[in-house]
Length: 249
Image (cartoon, rainbow, N blue to C red; front, top):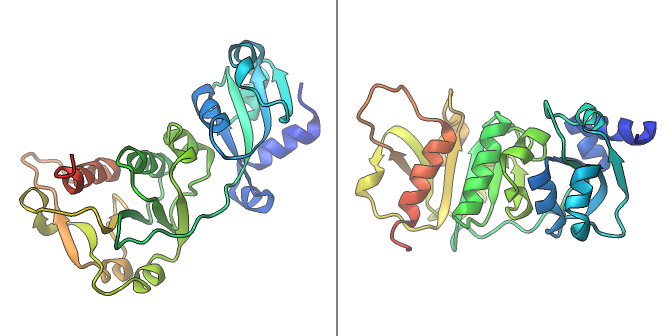
């Protein structure tokens, strides 16, 4: 069993205020923990089942404390409904300098509050090799356990920044292209888009907030043929990103 102090610390990191206070976050599940261990993000502690500890014994750093527990105890510590492999406590990575959107495409998220969607969007950024993801300060926490899990390991490779989005957009050069999805925008399939500037994705239910929408230089529309009212924000982002990169292959 882990000590009471360790259990208390792990449970505290379920909440954003303690992640911020301690500068740490949780990584749950075997795949994500292995991604963490092969990355440059510092691991503070590992909590593993005996079976999983044996499986990855060659990957365990000697300097990191390891607790071996039952699957039942691991699940009690975890935010997952079941966890029979691993949980890690990791340090929040140091923030890197923001990329220059004049040279490469940056994905920005405006009030995307579902952690699963935020995690999937970070994974999409990884797939397309984007410079990173800028989240409004009203987005779901990119370091919440559900967000981290949804990235499927991409949290180790994609820089994330949290900013007041209208202020950040207002600081960019006025000639920089700023794109956003809009039902009344230009048909994305008829455009030739270059992967520079900022692509902003908004809340699935409310779209972009008015101050962010005011910063757009071009609105993009994904034409549909059926009766669905809307697309999931991550699905929409995937379609749009593919159009940015279709001529880069």
